[in-house]
Amino acid sequence: MEITGIIITKNEENHIAGVVENLLPVCRKVIVVDSGSTDNTVSIAEKSGAEVVFHQWAGYRDQRRFADTLAETDWILVLDADERLSAGLREVVIKLKKQEDPSPVRAYAFRRNLHFMGKCFRNTFLTCEWKTRLYNRNFAEWTGGSVHENLSVNGKIQKISGTIDHYPYQNMEDAAEKLRRYAFLKAADKFKAGKSAGFWKIVLNIKYNFIKKYLFQFRFLKGTPGLILSWLETDYTALKYMRLYELNNLSRDKEKSDDSK
Image (cartoon, rainbow, N blue to C red; front, side, top):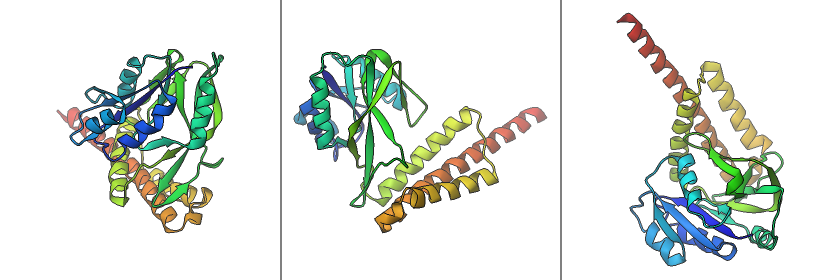
C-alpha cells in the first residue's frame, strides 16, 4: 500500500511544518492544498518537504474533493494542519503499508484526542469520535455542508488502534473566534436543510450540551481547562441555534413582505 498525505491550509504557519514532518515517514508524498495564505505557510511547507498546490477556497467538502484528484496513489491519508499522528498510530500505518491488498477494507478510522490549555481530553467510549482519515479514493467521496464535511465510503471501514492528536486552539481568543465561525456556518446548513429553532430548543440544547461535555465526558476531572472548554463549546451550540432562529425569522419576515406586495 502506497499512501499520499493531503493537508488543506490557509495561514497555518504555526502548524504546517509539524504536520508535514509528521506525515512524511508514512507517505510517498505530502501535498498541501493552500487557498491563498498571506503568511509563511507556503514557503514553510515547501521547505519541510511538501508539494504545494494553490486552489481557491471552495468550501471544506469541495476543497477536499479537489485535493483527492492530486494524489498519485489510490490510498490517501488526510490530516488538518493542527493534527498529528501519534507515535503509536504511525507504527500502525507503517504496518498497514506492508500489506499488498487490505480488501475488503476500503478505509480506516482512528480516534482523535483534543489538546487544550496543556490538557489532553482523551476520546473515550463516551465521546465516540472516530475519524476516517486513511481511505482508498476509488471507494470514497467527501460529502457534507459548509463545515464538518464527512467521508462517505462504499465498503468496509475498519477501526484501528492508535490516535490522532488534535491541537485546534492556540488560546481562548482563537477558540472563541473559530467556534463562532463554525456555529454560523452550521446554522446556515441547518437552515438550508429546512431546520428550525425556537425558545425551548435553544434552552434545552444549551443545557444538554454543557451537562454532556462537562459531566458525562468527565471534563470536570481536567480542572479549569475542562470547564473553559465545555463552556466554549456550549457557546458554540448556543450561537448555532440562536443564529438558526434568526434565519428562520428573517425568512418569515421576507415571506410576509412578499405577500403584502
